[in-house]
Image 1 (tube, rainbow, N blue to C red):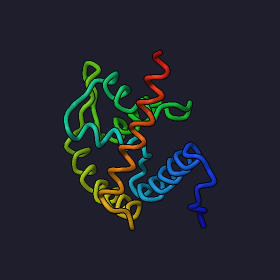
Image 2 (image 1 turned 90 degrees about the horizontal axis):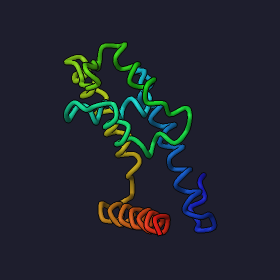
Image 3 (image 1 turned 30 degrees about the vertical axis):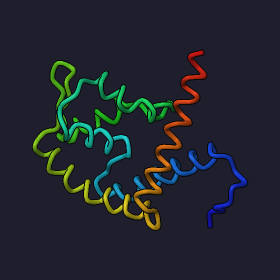
Image 4 (image 1 turned 180 degrees about the vertical axis):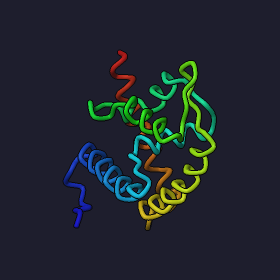
Length: 143
C-alpha cells in the first residue's frame, strides 16, 4: 500500500508515479510488444508525420536516461512495419494506424485506472500546479 501522506516531497511522488506508469504501460502493452516510448511515438505520429528532430523535441522530457533512446523505439516500429521514414520524416503505415487504434483502447483502460477517484477539476488543478512549479524553476534557471 502506498503511503498517501505528505511526509515525502513532490519529487518523490513524481518519480514514483512515473515509475508506476512505466510499469503499468509495460504490462498493458506487453501483448502488442510495445514500450511506453513506442506508444508515445505512435500517438504523436497518428496525428501527422514528423521529423526525427521534432519527435525528439516533443519527447524530450522522457529522454533523460540513457535507456530512453528514441532511435531504438523508432527502429522497432519501422522493423515491424508500423512506421516508415523517408528523408528523415516518419509517418505511420496503414498497419501502424490499425494497431494504433487497438493499442489506444488499452491505453484508455490504463488511463481510466490511473484517474479512478480523481475528478477532472482535481486533475486540471494538479497539472496547473506542476506546470507552474516547472515554470518557476525554468525562470530561476534563466536569471
